[in-house]
Structures are given as C-alpha cells and as structure tokens.
Image (cartoon, rainbow, N blue to C red):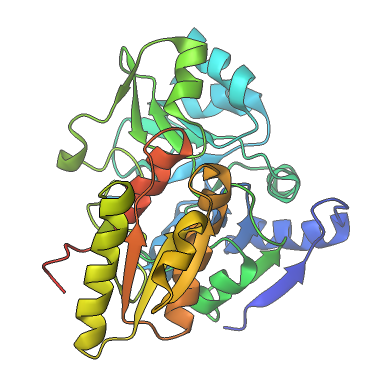
Length: 343
C-alpha cells in the first residue's frame, strides 16, 4: 500500500483536499490527521470493518477502547443513551478542546469501539482540519494516536509516516500540533466525576467548572480509558525518569548519565532549559522551561522521537512539577520509563 500525504494549511482550509480525505473515510479506510493534541488515526466510527483496520495497522489490542471524535454536540444524543447535565456544562466550557467525556453508550455504537464496555469516550477536537474532516465525512470518527501501539505519540506528519507509512491510505499534514499530549479523559458516569487519564485540560480547570473531581481509582484493573496501560508512549531508547527535586535531581541525572556512558551506552539527557548548562559533559535536548508547562507538553514527544532518530540508547529525563499540564507530562514519562535499576 502506498500512503498518500496531503498538506493542508489549518488557517486556510482547502475543501477540495478535505473532500479527498473524507472520501477515504467513507470508503472504510484510514486517514491520519492532526488534532490540537496529537495526530489521530481516523476511521468511520460506525463502520466495524473500518474500525478493525485501526487495531490491525497500529498493532493495538482489542481490549483498549477508542475515542470517538465529533464536530457537532448534537452527536452526543446519537452516541450516548444518557446525557447528564454535567456533560453539557463541560462541553460548553471546554469543547472544542482536549477533553474526552465517558458516557453510557447507545445501541448505535459497536462493541469494537468500546472494547465491549457499556460506556463510550467522546470528544470534539479544537482543530480546523479535524473538524472539517468529520463534517465532510458525515460520520463520527474514531481516532487513537497515529503511531504504532505503545510507542511515542506523533505531533507532526513525519512522526506518523515514520510509524505507519505503507500501512494506511492517507496522512493529512497540518503541521505541528499545539497541545502535544493527549486529551484528558473524564468519566462522568460516576459521582464525583473521575479523571481516567491526565491530559490537555488540567484537573484544576475541571474543578473550576464542576467542583469535586476524583483522580484515578481502580485504573490498573481494567482498560476503561485509552492510554491506561502501565507501559505506553515509549521511545526505542530506554528512558529513565528522575523525579528528585532541584539540586538532588541534577546530581542524580549526572550520576546516572555518567554511569551509563562509562558502560559504553550512547546517553542523552532531556532537561529543563534552566538546567541545560549543568550537563555540559553530555548530549542534552531541552523540553522547555520548567515553569512553562505548555511548551514542555508541546515538545515532549518530539524530543523523545529526536533521541531515537539520532540513535541514543539511554535517555535520562528530568521530572517536572505535577501541577496543571505537568500531571499529564509526568503520566506520559512514567509510562515511557523503566526503573533505573532495570537498564
């Protein structure tokens, strides 16, 4: 299969190209496209055969449910059999945007989308290309991240091509994504609402709108949310996350980098901008200033992929504060990391 790449300016949507991409979706095939979070791998959410192709092309297990993307809030009433008032309140506050709501699914939704669960995960992306594609395809679109399963998520079209070229029909190149980490997944079938996956909308933002929010729970015992596997978002290199604070963090990063370099490994450090000069003896890639979490989130996956592209074998990563987007970043890093004692 030859993968076609269509370049579209998100600020000046070319509807002719959007129609071409939508036709691929209508034919039951796959299109990778940008959202504000990461690139998604899209298929017609109401076509079981098309949805099955996503699992095959990504190597994704069938017990990992998918998120359905919509372009009109009216779709909630088709896809879910119960829309609580809190859903509309959250949609008004955060949609279009990086928030996924977990609701009771309707009979219209196939079990392949929800991995047999009676709930469905739905969001409305804040990206002109994504919204235009959904509208033109005239169907909700399932769209997990457009990468091989378990690997680092793609934040530009080249990342998608690196993983899926020849496996899917089309990639829509809309440039670099803005948020850089996946959407927050919020289960509103429980009281209080429960964050199943940290993401582009912070817990603090959610609390401002709906009050009490629970974080996590029995997450490791089921797959009720995408991205809840213990190992996920992994680069090819072995990543070691250092969670100590301030000076202790720098000392531990230096110790580990020196140790693995002495063993002959090609070692890189993913550092905050303010600590970059502390690691002059090593190869360093900057994720951003520790105080600028939006920048760090936007750069996270691209930095990890760049380490892989340059053949690094060990990545020592500085941890960040777990506030705002920092919670989502640390969630991704912990899932990508191995214990420092396992390398």
